Length: 174
Image 1 (cartoon, one colour):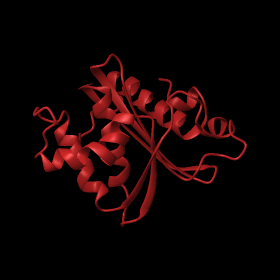
Image 2: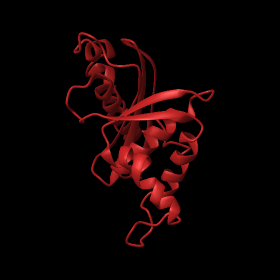
Image 3: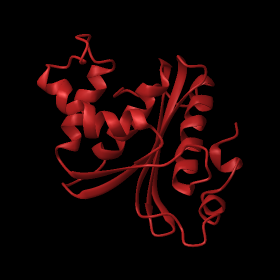
Image 4: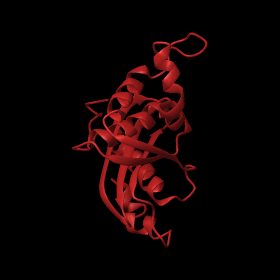
């Protein structure tokens, strides 16, 4: 079984940028096909070094759910309230948590047209963990060679491969 490190090592990814990625958390979700088996990946970077990584699998999900779940899992691991920069390639996650959620909550989790917010369970979880920290959200174009995003993407894809082959169980929290 080839893991993401067999594709590209973290050092190789980080070496693509001479000044390294910024510190912070990089998240990504993947689904193949969408909907279908999905994975999420999270990488914590300090300077030019990966200090922690995590990934999980869901046998039947969507890409958007995996993107949100990656953000949730990244924040759940923090032991105390802190300031954290989360970088995602998902405008759905960034706009959802920084813009849309304000009105969703005012309308009791309904969209402007009256329908229920999609993925409400995960949005509510994300809202809860975000409130425990000072979170800044950054967006980066996916698959553009950004080192933190590339490693998070490889973790998410590895979770799918490993989950399908039964090497990692479905995320017990998701």
